Length: 433
Length: 143
Image (cartoon, helix red, strand yellow):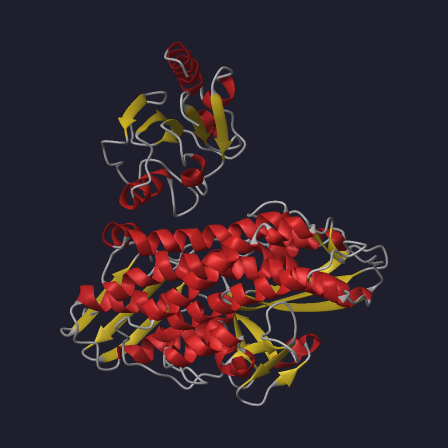
């Protein structure tokens, strides 16, 4: 290829502080973007094929292995799907326990992302460790928040990574009241620390940037959706989870091992904390709403860099919810309901820390899985990430390579991309000529 | 718990030489030991401990079985030598704890050089020999 005189290539081979591996390759000719490819090179993980022939009841434990950060999301979406396939509904106490363990995952994941992965970008540090040298108390608090989330998952799930106590139909064992009560002092400290987190991150310098996204998130009639709900958007979508394939489609893109999800006829959409917040602002818990107002977020948030503030608001919400659920908890007589498989298909979704996670299974009359589809949040955000980067580059192309690279990485981390999940998929390569 | 040191072995039993840390910790029958597959809860493990030994496989290009002793309470760990399938490995954990002021007063890290990290493979003979030698040395040293 003949290099153009004014062509710049900027390659970021490895994108640090994202889960998994991916790359961004960017070619600029003068101020014009001639090529922008957000590539994925972690091999596809074939989870969907691996599930075929396995029993329906194994889906939560197998799919939990897809991600060490958000196993509860995988377990919950798969349980929701299998329960729908079997025509079973969980009683309120078991639903509350499912929401409680999910809050533990939000606390653990959001705590990690805010303090160790994203805050360093805003404050000019190359890593969470470098940040910790100047802000040991802050990073120490972030670490404790993460630990509290992990501990909650351990108490309910048997262990913090790939918990073993969740099952289709509920849990193998329901926690006792004293076991949950013992968590309260840490959760009360965590609520205060989460509020402090909102106030800290809302003071960060925010790049001026905004986009008119189609936000897609779940909505529940009674509460800020986490573990169940319908799927809605700010463009009029309002569907049952079982209608996912009618509205969305996945396409394979040559540059990536991951499938990219899009809305049929419309294309890119945005899932995750920004979408959840903007679609369900009216359902924020009292302190979360108060802190969002104080942080100046407004009912709809369109600057993706403010996602760090939204995550902090969701941390507050998660702590409020854990304390509420524990306060109302009465140990169920049975930790699960009986689920008898039948030949059918089931659709399940939940709000993973990074956004909507959709599962679909077909099960035969013996309870064996004949087909599976898993659509993680990062593959749904892939197109939106690329669109963000193109838009963000306008007016910034003259920045020196190092500064541009820093800002692009920061823009990608707005999505807390979990690449290992999405390849089921991240390295950043930016090229300038 | 003060008075007796804690030996932590880190590794993956199913990835060849990566098992080295686990093998040392499980053979030290007289010591307080902990076997971990990653560094996720290392800081919690050594909280309140006065003296901690961590054994892990490392990869620097030296011959298999070469043992490197690092006085981590005094020396920074070089990044990229203690491999991890996760982004947050031993060096990152130790340096984060140092920044937060939560390193044990005495923390010694033994890195056992590995060369074969094939999935499903047993540890190489050189690493097995190094494990036996380190177990003997640690046991005679009160481990």
